[in-house]
Length: 421
Ligand code: LLP
Image (tube, rainbow, N blue to C red; front, top):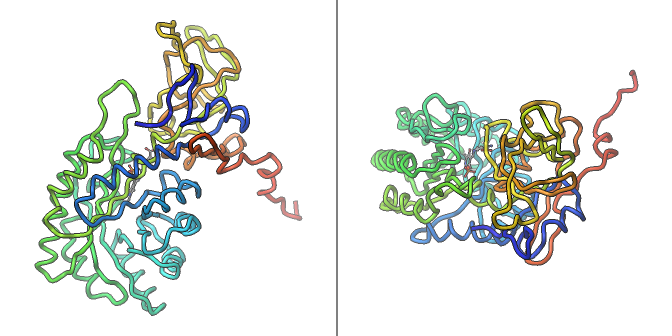
């Protein structure tokens, strides 16, 4: 459930009509609902309330400082994958002891930054990374907690670009080699082995792959303990999917996911960490856009809107579907027309949806792309020199711009022309 609902004939975010935001901030613009974020975070907490746990928000899904502050104030930890994300988590007031650092290519400066600023654990993804971290810790006189990310070779049954748990993916250490890698980790100075980490992919709509992966983690944990490793934490990653279409069957709920965790690893007495991103923020955000032109093609009508692939990349990159709805509520039984909804960028891939059934729309009409809170603004660019899309946060009956749209002057000021030109 989210807080984007029709009321008095128009679409609201909580108690704010979205048309007000479109008017005051301009379009395109991302709008997030604080109540929805809070609710979704609470569902994960509730799903794990049977055990000691930390819900680490996957910063990559939405890294706006206001969103991170809201999550951090609710008690969330953060899963970061770069120095920039670490800096954002800290700037949002999240203490180092609630930040886990994932990612296959952590650099020495990034690792140093996290050691200096405080870190809950590094999720190590390869032997070379492990050795580099150990050497760095020795040079800094530090000891850091580590988990090793294992690749369980499980098919997550999701889009190939966002599956991470098969042996042909770049992520983690093959589970078959895990015992040897843990033995080396335990022997290296500066590292304190505390846990096992796994993440098999994103937008999973079936619990079976989670179950298969977590059973392998449980088996590994027992084997590691038998070898004397003090495994006290399991980081089980993110990945629980969301409904992108209102009309199809919804993916499992966090409570059902929590049950799978309990059934597979619950008897190990470990502290549980999870790293959800999309499930918390995906349906807590929409992208508002205005129709620029309605263009009649040979055999179809194009709705040319002012949002484009640079603002919301998912349809162009993954063929992803985002429901598109008008801000003015269509009357019951009102006729619909199929439109190809496209942006102004000069690529045919800049198509959000073909044949979207929408009520008759004219230039100036407003639409919302739903389920756009995760992997929306964070993947935006300034391609075609379109200013980076702004973001707004709604709470109750008020809203604030949490990232302003840059002016052309600000955009241009980032470049410089060398004196010798
Ligand atoms: N933890 C790790 C180590 C991850 O790599 C990811 C996502 C997550 C947690 C969070 O997964 P979530 O709960 O959000 O599914 N840009 C793509 C999604 C890429 C996901 C990458 N990793 C998209 O727009 O669908």
